[in-house]
Image (tube, rainbow, N blue to C red; front, side):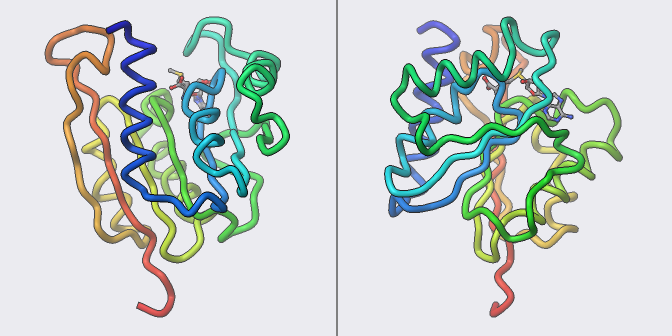
Length: 185
Ligand SMILES: C[S@@+](CC[C@H](N)C(=O)[O-])C[C@H]1O[C@@H](n2cnc3c(N)ncnc32)[C@H](O)[C@@H]1O
C-alpha cells in the first residue's frame, strides 16, 4: 500500500474509533494539504473542521493554503472546513473551542522541546473539557509527560504499522491518545 493510502486508512481507523456523533468541532494542527483534515470533515457532517498551519514547503511537497482549499472543494467538504494560518505554539482560537484535536506529523517539525511543549499546551487549551486528542508523529511517545502536565488523562501510546511511516524499518510512527480533564471530574 502506498504511503498516502496507508496514512488515509490509518486515520480513517483512528477517527472511526472515536465514535463521533457527527456534530463535533475538530481542529487539525499542522493540516498541510489536508489529508487528515478532509477525512475528519467527512466524519462530522453536522460539525466543522478547522485546519491550522504555517504551510512550510520543506515539510510537505506542494504545501500551501491554496492546495488545502482546493482539496476541501475536491472532497466536497469546503462548506464546513476553515483554514487558518497559525503557528501551533500560538493558536488563534478561544480556549475550549474544539471537541477533538488531531495532528499528523506536525509537532516533530518544531525544533525545541520547549516549543513542542508549548504547542501541546496550546492544543490542550483550545480543547473543551472532556475533549480528545489524537496525535500521530515520530517519537510521539515523548509527548506523554507534557500532555499529563497540561491536564490530560487517559494518555496512551500505540505504535503504528511501520508502513505508516516512509517505509523505513525502525522509524515507526506512534499514536498518542489523550483526553482533557473535564472541570466536573
Ligand atoms: C509532514 S507535514 C504533515 C501535513 C499533514 N498533517 C499530513 O499529515 O499530511 C507537517 C506540517 O506541519 C506544518 N508545521 C510545521 N511546523 C509548524 C508549526 N510550528 N505550526 C503549524 N504548523 C506547522 C508544516 O507546514 C506541514 O504542513
